[in-house]
Image (cartoon, rainbow, N blue to C red; front, side, top):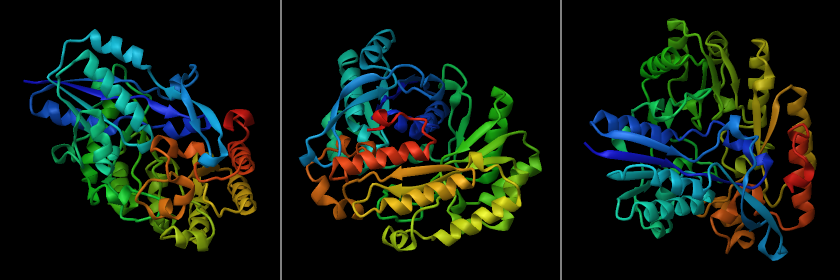
Length: 413
């Protein structure tokens, strides 16, 4: 039997606005690996450096100053670590027996340097212990990830694909649980890399429901959140029918996003009966930009989907309506109109700054603004594709407007 230690590193946080984007950020891949490792007889423990929503009132830890906007502007902004510090991590590791193997994951590319720092801390405390470095970042940039000295694992661990997240490695039960119906995405949007991370894999809806039912019974929690980038590409209706048929006393949320062109009257009716409370329903932008970004749906699809949800009297306060911003040719007036339209529905106007990732068409289209920036400096909250302080301030002010002025303007800039 091996002793396996899983490590979830802290993340980079530019400002208070970015905290919302770390909601529901459970280390799902590591929890699935925990289930697999236990299934073959290994013991598993988790060191979780991440801070979750009920801990966000704690002060953030200063990280360093990073460039904001185009490099030629010479502007910088303080950035922070969300989660535990590396001093804490060193002490936590030193208090434990040396494991046989350590697995660490990093999915968001702009969190790569904090993952490297976590690996350096591990190596200092446990020299010579094998470290396996996986996730979206090592898969997309294996050469860069290899700088860590860890063994880079590219792609998905096939043995863990159909495992369900094992929350028993958490030291306390969370307030909600994350579930998946599909892995991967069938779309190829020009700013996204989800479609490059492997083919779409569909999980058995009945098995997913059984896992939800088991967690509901074991932990007493009712809130389950789906994080798939496109769950409607799988057997979403069958999943909902199974939830209804088994009479599960749960609340369901689909915050990975339901493409509006896939929303049907049957789907909405089933969502109501299955007690779906909230979803992300992409509003996107104008049709011309949607086509440029290779979106498969248009604004009219969103409006039709809204009408279907209104017919079933859904509470739109739990609906997030997302749309991309931060592109060089954005016009702010239509963005203001979209914010007003969404807020008029009673929904959350979710501005989604584009994360420019090398190798995507949008990165190439903005290359003259982005060349020379590290992955860390491409954090969307640093507005890397904007070339003036006026634009950065205008976008930050819009972000505050979209989120009902919950964030102080200077904090956002």
